[in-house]
Length: 386
Image (cartoon, rainbow, N blue to C red; front, side):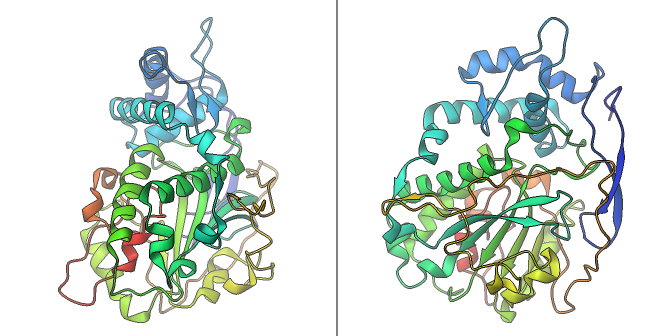
């Protein structure tokens, strides 16, 4: 694949995707993109894409076409590069997904949904957005982290999941607030090409299964699961860097080996499962809530949420990702994984076409789900509500 020309290179050493080694990553602005590069190809199609979609906003960023022989604004290139990475650098497939996502955003208006008010009795305690300083695996100085706490709905899942459309709106609002925290409209660093480095403009995602049953799944959860997984696969590519599944019973650990056997060869990282939520600090450091082994206050009262009908929406409204600079070298940290935990596995880029029925991810998850594990043994039911 052709590389951007005049890519103003300044290397910074940072933990690699597995957290076990290091990689050199470039963090300087694009100054020019060669004509035969997929990014240049997709940017050249942008006038037609925006014209057909009738909409030019994506992830809170206004997309602008090239003018007077100049390339598109940096923030526009950031969005285009995300769709390229989601499609393994294929500009044709990226164009199709981008167009579909723009049409959906015009119709659904997720920015308006982001600011809607939701009943706290239904959705309180289910989702939080916070920041983590110097997380061990990602490369930003401050990473946005989303906590999905499923135990909050374990006693009465019908309350949260019973109205599928309302649940989807709540989940979209949480996702849009996450994107708002990433501040992509202020992004000033480039994103490497597919498989050439880490996208620092993504959020971490933590799924907490405390008190969640893995052997019973109500119909309302299945309905919400199908809708959320399908929607987020299509319309929110490249928004999550790593996923951590915590407080998962040990009996479910066998699933990871089976899942890896079903994944493609480039599915090597991105997901980590652990039975004890307090072990999360082993991967993300101490700057996480105390209920996960960190030193920070509990999520409730300290993290940001959606807007609720009691007037609350949490704290940390100014969360923002800050990418490392050439002079800001990430410190070396011990990120040896817990011996009993499975290795990180990366979601395949080809899994973006997996249907909801083939997923074992919970509906509150974003990006491509993992493949289904058949009922030949103790399968995960609650895993489908991610």
